[in-house]
Length: 369
Image (cartoon, rainbow, N blue to C red; front, side, top):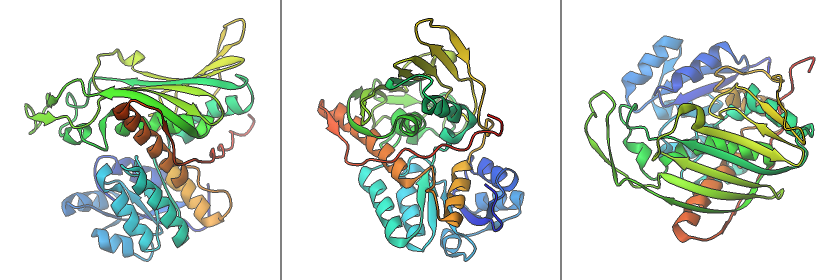
């Protein structure tokens, strides 16, 4: 992804995740260059800026900065649409942390507005570009499992109140297990199997409130639960494949069984790594014999490569050729899928999606593969 002139990026949001974005932007991806960082708490921006030798700016000044071409939006989910819209209206491309927005309409508006303004919009998760899932994508494209007929994506846990110092927002609309963790799984499925045309689902909040047990100033406080925290859904892909999706903050499960991502094909089954990671083991179950084979990793970026989606957006911005892989189109479709699942659960019926997407191109395999 090397380019002679790096694309300047500005980061809005100096929380924990900003550190890995900045570290990778300065050490891993040579086609992007951090210019500045902004935060509603100026001291946090100043700390990050000092650590990485960049400017601490107000949000307005960062968006207006002449060297910033991509605004990387690491704010809380409820602010994703607002900040990205400000960037796009200022003539800048925007890359949001997941999800792209917390409503279907806001996500679609960002995609439309970016097209009108001649800029790019996209967003995390970019873990589907990691070596583990790209190896799985290649196996599917190479016909190793035949025609994909089904998929399973399950992520199960007991919630964030046991470890997160301030977990309130995890249990509010726009979060919950589906919007917080779901984008990793739904994006992985969409990147491999293509768009979803309809969903059904069930869901509820098993517990009306949570108590923070993590150490810190919020320890012992109660959190009202205002979103579904256990969801089971079926996804009908346009290709004809059917997926099952389960997302929960309500159950106890051993870590080795808490995440499942599997693609079932007419000639074999592909067991994939946790899509919240970039590497991991990819296992192929062969037809008839049911023998298992651990596939060699065919792609790079198996370590924490958060920001690879920003780098790929910079490549698309400079080259003007193939679209960015972590595109706004796909991120908006993922929001539509998740929103539709919650609507199906509330209404007890099938919900047809209003968006679609084009499956992103795979990354090139390692040389010699």
